[in-house]
Length: 361
Image 1 (tube, rainbow, N blue to C red):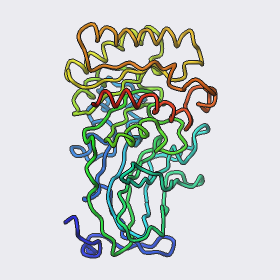
Image 2 (image 1 turned 60 degrees about the vertical axis):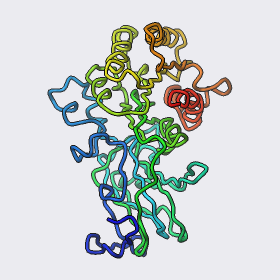
Image 3 (image 1 turned 90 degrees about the vertical axis):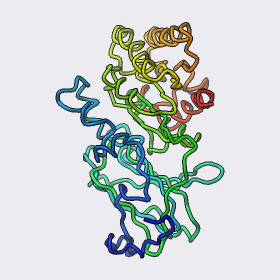
Image 4 (image 1 turned 90 degrees about the horizontal axis):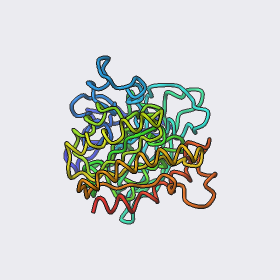
């Protein structure tokens, strides 16, 4: 479709539907000029999955938890520009589970942000009803005016999509989004915290704060309870063209021994394939829950960093997890002494930001 083409010029491809007594033309998010990001293998496999088919097959040595959670859409986003007076959304989700410790607006909701010259601003969240948590239908706004908006819609953190359509008012224009400052993704690998538990909405996960602030694409490979540092995952990550890599799986190494056996090997598997890739290594953010064990885990992770520096690596960075929640009211940063709330995620992102900016510079 030509970038300046109006929606009414392509009516034959889309059926007008009504929502809240207003007509919309609904577009599949896989159609141009919409840009779908966060599913690194979508162009090849046409699946809303965060991992390729080979690594989630029965024959793959990857743990079953990560295989199942790969269908969650954390980190995925749809980008476009439009002057539509109203923007709506319809989506069929993969599961109808409601988590006890995480808002439905974060688990299964969608965030709309508008990008401006000064950054991005949150506009509205659409979430499924509690009585039907596997289906979303709603309107972000009905009175946007006629100016052109640069739009980003973040997809759910702890649910996945079967189908998703964006509704725009007839007569509106829809254009491709503006290029990102960092089009090659920043990739995050780790635990439930990396995946976004328990942000109140998708845009408040620390990965989303960071990539929004630096105007970067992202891939989120956080897997709740299942980011275990397997080499098959490292090889998968190393196959991608990235701007930077955030290595944050401390929390899901079940024992100190497992962490020691896997952490440096995981790092070296990626570094061996991508010698110039900026890599930021984190230890776990909920340091206070067991300070003795957290300190021992931190030293294992610090050793990976120190050994890399001794070997001449100048593209590796270490962030002490004890610093991620700041110095005051640290007990206000989680929902359960483990998973960050919005305060915790904001503090994490603010601590990581200068290191990531240095790495990318």
